[in-house]
Length: 152
Image 1 (cartoon, one colour):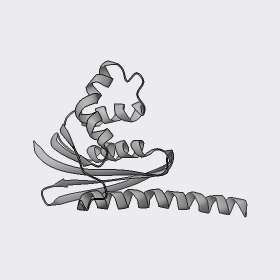
Image 2 (cartoon, rainbow, N blue to C red):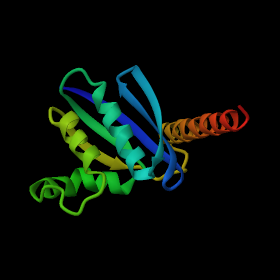
Image 3 (cartoon, rainbow, N blue to C red):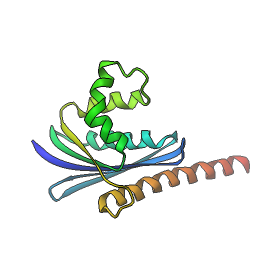
């Protein structure tokens, strides 16, 4: 199995509000970067969406070292998720995304690692910037559309 590194981050302006996510998938010298944004979302949804989108681009089963500044994501993936599945996600938030995570992660061997945010880690800082920019871009588009509609 190939061993890949995935770096992710999610951002949310207000919480809930406009959100963005970003990921970097690295295999040896190859790298893919992705970003996205949604409105009326939360930081945790964006963190998880980044992970899902990164896993979706893998074309074969891989050993995945996942790096995130979200301790919630690390603990959820490494410790809690199996128990949530056994209890059919009773009382859990974002079950739609966790079910999607299970679908895209099933053929991979994934271990999640925590990175301290805003501490100079190059890939984390890059994902943080890209995720925030994606959220801001969506917010600007929304405000421009509101302005155009109000002045039409």
